[in-house]
Amino acid sequence: MCSIPSIDHFSSTVGRAGRLRAEYIDSGNPAVLSRQRETAAEVRAALSTIQRLTADNVSQQANCQKLAQLTENRLRLMDQAMDLKRSGKPTLEAQVPVNREMMAAADSGETVIRSMEEDEQRLLSERQKRESASFVIVGALLLGSMFLAFLFFLLHHQSIMDQVRERVHAENAQRNLSARLLTIQDEERRRFARELHDSVGQHLAAIKMGRLHA
Image (cartoon, rainbow, N blue to C red):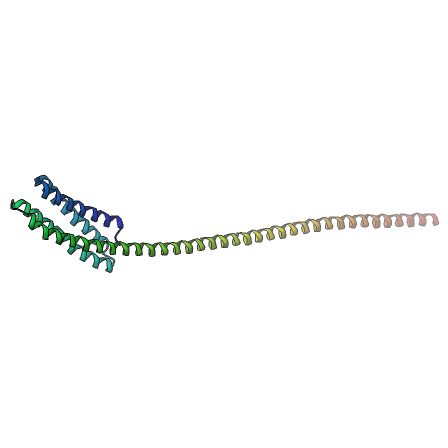
């Protein structure tokens, strides 16, 4: 896909070549002729850049072929006009048909360029729509991922809290059981002590009673 700045650069370079052609015809300055030749080479280079950038677009490549033919014809007419000037012969009448052909080629070239710019704008709009849709999808995926991550976090946190509560409950139950066992042991010791005391007391009383009867 070509970029509009590439097309704009091509158009401005072609326009500069045309102005230098007119300046040379008016002045006959060889330096201007040399600059025009250099600018014509820049025109071809700019056109080559556009062709390279549109290599993946069939419709733009077709426009590029038309533009290349029109551009070469326009540059040829510029050379023809400048050759008439260099010949030293009266060139006013001879320049008229050349200028007419040059203007027709320029108009046709502008039509092709407008078509390329419109195609470029359409492709740019489609690409922006795709990027917007991709942005929405990516945003939705990110929000969904964040929601799932938050949900998993809550579930994990709830699971940990349940485990902590169960552990605390088990530890409390164990402490209560230990306290109950200690209480039962203490009660058993007291009961055994009472029974032992009562039994010993009864035996001593019996022994004492036996001695009295004897």
